[in-house]
Image (tube, rainbow, N blue to C red; front, side):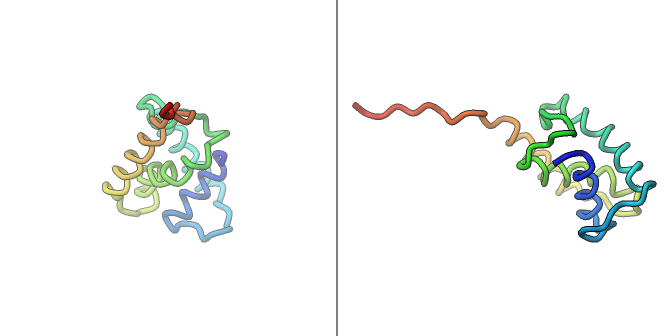
Length: 108
């Protein structure tokens, strides 16, 4: 996933955009600005250890939900605090998982 795909996913999640539609240039600029503000905050907090040009697939859904929280009021929509908390929990879990499988020892 890249930043453009993230933007479209956020707008679809908020039902501002139907699946397969493209955002207007104004909506795209607005959401991009919010992504550019929120993503570094998540990086500092250890929840988004990647850049927006190459978002790992397994981060796409929780990152979409988390940034949608900040985008929602710009479209007159309510912010869902429960969804924000769930998305942050999932992002923290993904970010703390080991990158390799744990070493296991068999009985001799």
